[in-house]
Image 1 (cartoon, rainbow over the protein chains, first blue to last red):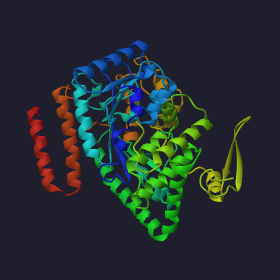
Image 2: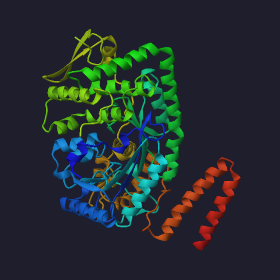
Image 3: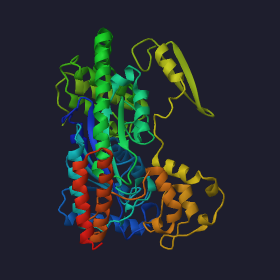
Image 4: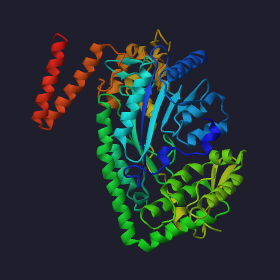
Length: 354
Length: 169
């Protein structure tokens, strides 16, 4: 698989399938792992990083894992940004230096970053609310890798990581939620504060330090030491249904108390996206969020959730430039974005351009 | 002119000065202008974990002062404790041994616990695996007793005894 193949497809996690997918965009687990015989990435020399990368690639081959390895070090900045937009690599990996890369599966469920903060960051994503399934898959994948690689591990502190905040299980269990109802009814802060009180982190669409956009929020654990993986997963599987209930109540409130206003907002958003001649990324996210909620509430019936999910990613700057095949300035991107949206939304059911 | 964020007419024209000589213009309706001008909502963005770690490490007054621990060097990766305090990142797995005394209170602060309970790699020595299994079972026993689930507690106690017997305790 090459990078350009990726522009023609989209990740499984955007399909909008799986339980609770009207609100839960995807379930994601990542594991931080380090090879026992090397210093952590920030302390590793160039040649050590090359060796770590080679060991990992040999392990992939021996384990017969069908993953494609992308050498991120050899990519230009636009391609690296493109991978960040697709949630395949972190900003940190994209912007760092030296030998590094990512192994991905054809459906983009699996992404294993090499030489990020830890030697390996194994990620598994599935659309919908399916954390136990994700754990089963990533646990198996981790076992397969571990048969080939000796991980840094102590019986007392578990998997040893570059940052003490990840030590132990090295696990981050997260869900990406679409919460426009809670945002519009101004209850979102209350929910966040409650989640933070039970030691869960809330982040925007693009992870740490990014602004929440499109009303998407990622909720994940912070504790990694002293509780087992199933225990940490259970914290999420216990609390997320409550958040979903709050969001559904909020949407119901909007539907009953402000139906006309809501219908108008959703229809206008759809109308602008279908007809605009130039549009910013920020406005696009805002309007797509309205349209996504509109579909889920039955106010729009000629557009699929999967298309809207894809558009959140495929209207990002690097994707548009990859599609166009050239670098574009801010204004040009806005024109390209509007044109792409018009094409994708022109009759509601048009498949993505292949 | 139309508001940048919705279809209403823009009634506010705002110029933000980003830095000297650089500015950005916004055109908003009443509602979005209010949103734009409102102070940023607090604590929606969780600080990154390495930031938290840095803060926690540098918090105790005793650690803020230059201390002998700062100059301590890991014989494996050569990182000093001071370097870790500044970056929030350790240099190699062995640092957990070398800086053990300084790290344990930090781990307690971050995670509320200081012993691993969870997955053990298959390669790890068998007794290590049993040890962490024991920790996990003991944790579960604690919780079962607290939840007054005595049936589960009895089952867990038996499991623990079996493993302890295997280890010849």
